Image (cartoon, rainbow, N blue to C red; front, side):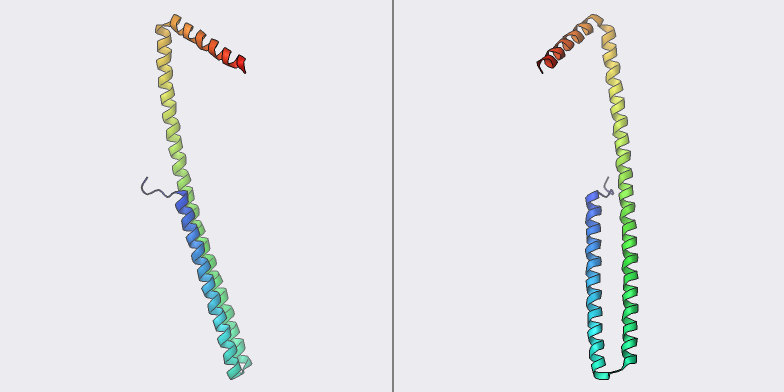
Length: 143
């Protein structure tokens, strides 16, 4: 159980990854903004359509590459968390199955004990059953 990952851990990791991606996108946007500002300043100083076209092409390529990188990273992180969630669900299912099996064994043992008592003392068992039935009847009648 020491190595199991809880749903809260998965949520925290997903939130941290989302925050990191947001920070990276903000940083990339600032870099693009600074590059555009530098390009505009250079054009003002060196006025050239070829230079502007080249710089625009570079910025567009950089933006496309950054988008691909973020999409790949988000896809990998999503797959990682989906796998963690699947493993946790399997672990919880197996634990539930084990508990259900234990409860069934316990119920069977108690049933065997009660059956044996009834066989040993049938008159007493019949009297107890009649008394319990009478009490249940009284409780139901009061409603």
